[in-house]
Length: 71
Image (cartoon, rainbow, N blue to C red; front, side, top):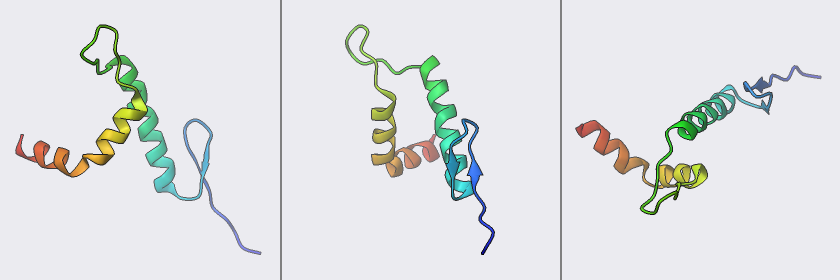
């Protein structure tokens, strides 16, 4: 038998690594912030879905980092 360590996020989900739990918590914090600071589309009432935003950020991560380093 061996000891097994798991990590619990703020919302009670269990992860096998601390990094996974921290990432989960940060995404949840970002989602909460985003719900109060929503990115709106070109049409009245059109809201960019949070999961679409995460996907776009992931796909464009290197370009975004370069841009932020310039600013």
